[in-house]
Image 1 (cartoon, rainbow over the protein chains, first blue to last red):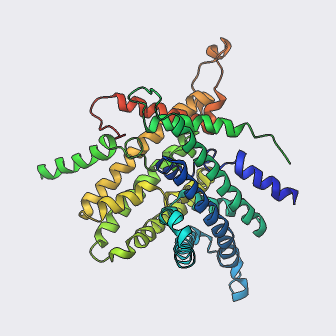
Image 2: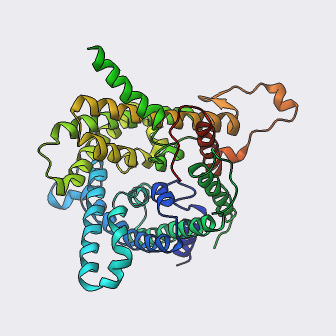
Length: 202
Length: 210
């Protein structure tokens, strides 16, 4: 239990998928103009990550990993090279399915999350989390916790950036730096802040 | 032939400099930063991404009349993912150490916004040769930023260039120290922010709209 909590805290703060591994920066910058949209996208990312990470774990360890197909009579088969194309297809399919389910049963939630869901299918953070999960040999339970933790960390980062951008909207920034360059420097300062958490063990 | 050449030159300059995908369109920085601690990984990543961008442009553009528009994103992703798998296998076979260091970031070329963005915006509407050049140009534009960031991070962070120490010893004796922050994540953010500032201050660059 303590290990899982430690993994969660680690993936939220120290190994923050956005500020330490630079995943999902495209939407981090594009969707952080207002706090409301940032929060909506953040929740959508948490949800999709918590679902796709374990589903990809099952597919990888059940079908693709070296020796996974020994039950079918192919103990030497190693299909792990197919993981990129499989993961991206699974992610796109799950995002599509989630979108349809939400649309059918909760129009209110769809109104707030719906526009973000298609964006998420190509968010590097989602594919990155699944690939990290394979590379770090997580167990099934760990893959759920890691997915949820990465999503939470991502949301924390994007909502904080949206809040900071609101505060500095009227700041007098030098002409060439205004815009993208300025946001990157803010992100750098945020990354330094998140690194302060390293060394904390539970 | 002459008009043809100047036409390709136009596409190249647009992708590499005037509308540089990273600095101007804010695309594809997801993976641009993580592999820039050292020059060697950055060079391999640049070559891999430029080739995937060029060939995905070529293939998607050749198929553009047969792709139904409502499933085009899936088709594009499949083409890109297949090219990335080939790239990953080649790297594992010939450059195993570097492919270990690049870890998941080769796979993340699939979700790199530059490649999908160029497939959507350019390859679906132009002929294969133009799309190939356009993909290559955008890949090179991305590489330029990547290599600049990697050069500064490796030089300032560990005093090296391609793994060779280049800062003379007497500077260390005088009290110069490597900047640890450059090796860590925040260094990459700062450097890319400052590079964009520099680029925006140079003449002949289209400015980002506010």
